[in-house]
Length: 136
Ligand SMILES: [Zn+2]
Image 1 (cartoon, helix red, strand yellow):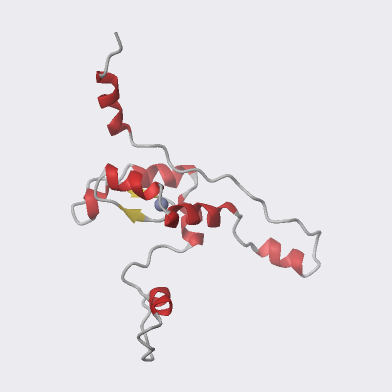
Image 2 (spheres, rainbow, N blue to C red):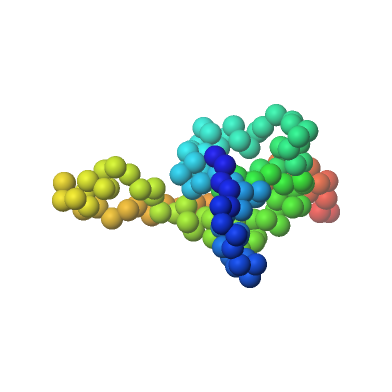
């Protein structure tokens, strides 16, 4: 999937440039929709160490399909606007063929389901530090 800019556009059109930029282009929502299914999700969160990826592919946000260099960066990302917007966008169920048929008066109209999307649980690596602190 390569997208190239065919026409020279005005230098002030940053929002347009961002839309077509391929450098930081990640997966589309329908692809992520597949990823957040329990089985795939687990696989993505427990990836093998890959030194070509940022943070050796150990810190991954499923919803945004992005790698982070460390746990701190990942946690900070969870609090950002980009991430929250992503979760919101994933809340609505994806468009299906059934839905298009319903729109064409085949069958009865059912509103797209809303589902609860939650940020993945914090990584277990941060736990041992907490256990060391004793309350006496
Ligand atoms: Zn994210």
